Every structure is written in structure tokens, then in C-alpha cells.
Image 1 (cartoon, rainbow, N blue to C red):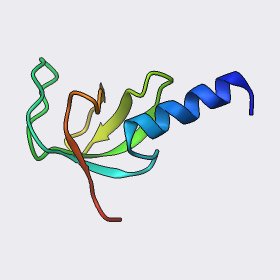
Image 2 (cartoon, helix red, strand yellow):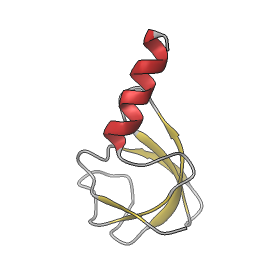
Image 3 (cartoon, rainbow, N blue to C red):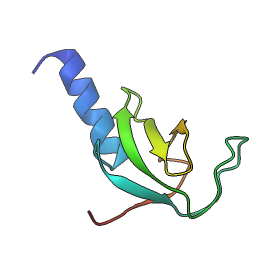
Length: 76
């Protein structure tokens, strides 16, 4: 595995979710994203910093930091 691959693997482990996982927000983020506790969506991408891009059921996509925004992975 090259350096880039190792960095991406570490970021995915740090994020604690996998691409394609269905998640739910545990609490409302302290930002102006418009997200609220209980929002659900699908993880589309995880960047090399561990931030997660989610397409939400309400019809938009946004990036979250699972380290500061508590999420719950839902059963498939």
C-alpha cells in the first residue's frame, strides 16, 4: 500500500463509518448546515481528513466531521 492509500485507510477508520453506510445524526450540529438531530442519510465519500460527505434524505448533501458531530450507523 502506498502513502496515499494508507492515509485514506486511516481516515476511514478514524471516521468510524464506511462509504454506503446509512447514518443518523444523534444531535444537532453547532453550525449553520441546517441539519437537525434525527436526520438520516447515506455516506457518499470520506476524505483524507476523515470528514464524511453525506447525501441526506431531505434532498441535499453536506460534509460532516464525525469527531465533532455524533452519528449513529443504522442497520442495513
